Length: 412
Image (cartoon, rainbow, N blue to C red):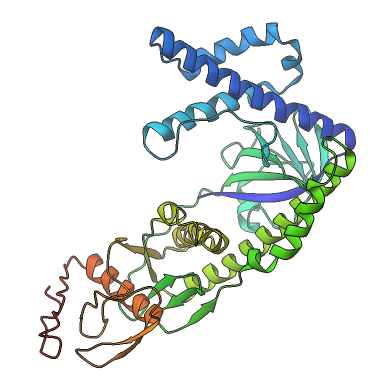
């Protein structure tokens, strides 16, 4: 399996300048090649390949001599990232590639090889940059893998060139708060575990929401921490202070950094919370049933945009997905149009007039009192298991005349 390990690095002032040059050069090449591809296609209907643009890179180095001081593989990686962006656009995964701006919050670049890690001095060697202090707060590989597979120099330095089948590319990134990180991609040569069998007893349904972050079919309610909402007053104060500073001044930069630190803390709190919840759900169940939500469409509701963004459902579902792959667990998804909230999970009655304001309701057919969210979680579990077993379920809505009569239940 291929995984990424992110560590913080502490470059010197001179190395920070070199990093800034690499960030800018990668952004320059990306934008230049994007413009070149657009020009050739619009005027001559020629789609330049990655190979063609790599050859054009040699010409650009003659035109812009300062590109010779930059890691050449990093420049080629920028070209590769551009073509991956176009591939994602053609396959409807992402929007059309846009120019990268110097004002982007996230600055990064990739290096595919020729880096080294010194475990004795806690340093990493990056081409064109040199040795940098790194905080290795976790092990890259387990002990047995290290002993039997990896090749060391002087027993402490791990070289990517000698272990290219295990050590892949690294990504250098800088946050708006001037913190630098290195993400090391590794391949431990382990196969993805096979999916474990599951049934009704070890499957759980999860319904995400705004009032409560998640509600499970076991009637467990996970409160929504609402980190952004709790920090809004402080954030608004910092943003007002930043807006009053003179543009381009040092005080303006200091004020903007304080705003960035506040946002970073909110993001760290949210990720920490979601990691803990996702680990708990994955470790306790063999399968997790969730709903395929149209989050992008839901964000168009201006009344709920901030709350939905604060909950970060997409990030949470992503964490569940890759952790399930690591441990051989299963993620079951139901369609976004399934009536999970409006259906009685006991008898299958469909309540059409259920609005968002109604949090509890009583089924007129079986007289079961339902909590809206717990009922939805149970239905998500039932729909997912029914779909996984290859059976279809049809729900029949009751008219007002036949509400007290026996209904047609699930038809399999």
